[in-house]
Amino acid sequence: MAPPRSYRTEALTLARSTLGEADLLITLYSRDRGKIRAVAKGARRSTSKLVGHLEPLTRVQLSLSMGRNLDIITQAQVLSNFNPLKENLAAITKGLYVAELVDGFGSEAQPNPAVYDLALDILEAIAGDSESELPLRFFELRLLLASGLMPELYDCVECRQPVVPGNHHFSPNVGGTLCLNCSPPEARIRPLSLRALKVLRLFHRSPSSKPPSLTVAPALAQELKTLLASTISYWLEKEIRSNSLMEHLQRESKSAV
Amino acid sequence: MTTDPTPSASPSLTRLIQELNKLPGVGPKSAQRLAYYVIRLPDLEAYALADAITAVKQSVIYCQECQNLTDSSPCAICADTQRDREILCVVEDPLDVLAVERTRCYRGLYHVLHGAISPLNGVGPEQLKIKELLARLNKDGITELVIATNPTLEGEATAMYIRRNLDRGKLMVTHLARGLPVGGSLEYSDEMTLSRAFQGRQELKAG
Image (tube, rainbow over all chains, first blue to last red; front, side):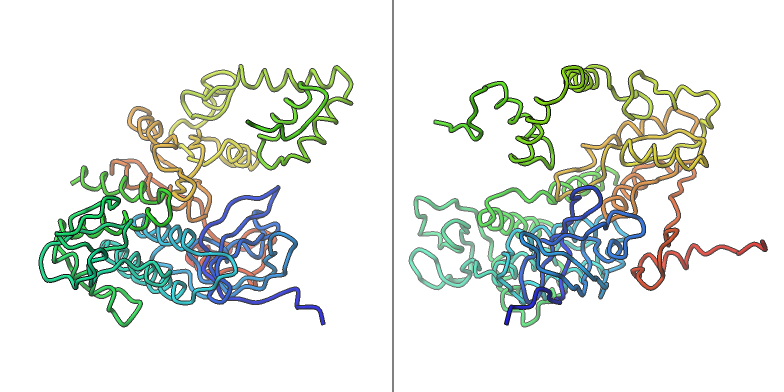
């Protein structure tokens, strides 16, 4: 018997771009199928039944039919549109950053339910609190964990000795924490404070994919951001585009104060 | 060493294929078909196409007022003294100006942003004509700004960005109504469209 030519799946819409005269090319992350790129036929027409359901950062239930190259979306129904998130520019930017990282780390036909659940929980957290950047740091670390790229936080990656409380080094390209005695020649070393290490370990050990409620000093928040951003860009081997808008908005907010 | 992707006895034909291949949505096979079509065209038609491309590159400029594409600045709309110069409609693209003009219900001026904030495509506020809009609002006697960006995530983000950069003076800032399209269907509407349609409901006047 021939395999079915259509399927149903639940997915998060990550991005969309125009295709042809009136179609949209939608990038989705499905819980049970991984990343999907599919076409929504005629979705740019104002009377399209699909378009409102396929805005980026929406959790949707979809029916798709398999195409030769790209699958075709035949039905879409919004499950959650994270509504408060889309009414605030800072929250939208953070949401798009989450989408860009899921797109970057996701692979087609390789489902990773942990990444899917994490993305939904983080979008909920951003919708609830658009000011704090800590949920993004939690998301970055847990995304690395769920993708099998978790940096080592407990032993020195060079001498394999457990790291003792104190200041250490961190290197994304050799795999994580280094004690002060070890500095492999190829390592791009960054300082790692004890407080930053503790926060990273807290994120790692958190039993839930919801970010813990935590407040950190601005200097520590900046250190965590630098450490995780260097690790993310090392693995993705590209610049995170939505970062520049986030930084632009932060610069404007600071200059307005 | 680079290999020629489209081996041909004619280098000029190869060049045309390569140039056509650079156009959006035109793959190598389509580029070949278009190039052979151009060869079979009557001379006059082929030269008219080449002339049109040359002319558009030489004469089309941005209007210094509204940033729309035009042959002369200010453009016909900005130069029209019959239009209401106190109301300004902000749109994403030049084609949106044509769409609004077709309605014949708006007689104010325009400002074209040439896109919407879309971080995933590398488009930030600096790439759009937002700086020009803010400068225009400061010097012209505009009393109402109609933000007519698309009701998409990118369009909404652009509208929010413009709003937060405006001086809170006498300027009234509005945006187009959200809701159901003519010929649409309630059954297939998403929650956000339908809830906004309810928020924007209007009194039904006796016919």
